[in-house]
Amino acid sequence: MARPCCAKPVARIIKVAEFEAGVIGLESAFWNVARMGLEEENRLTEELLSAIRESGNYVSRSRESDYKEALLREYKKFQAGLREKAGSSATSGST
Image (cartoon, one colour):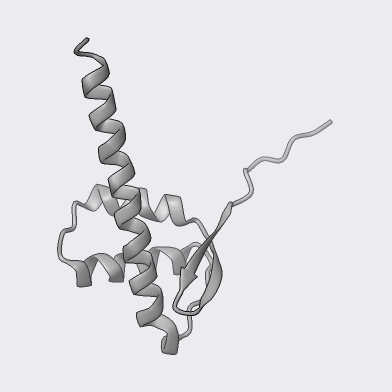
């Protein structure tokens, strides 16, 4: 049986304003933006929004600020998870 050449993108559900939205390529967008080392929130949210649009997600102009807020919140959770993993890796090696 033949296998598909490429993995299907995974959609993740996030809370955007008063609704839930499925976002394709969110994890990939987070990794790409993290590599940029951005700290200024306006630039960070612009890059996150651009990245998810490039993954094929539609975001209407009227909802951009809602998405930026949601993306920033989720990105901060992503970063916290990375810091937690890094911290547990560092402490597990010192026993």
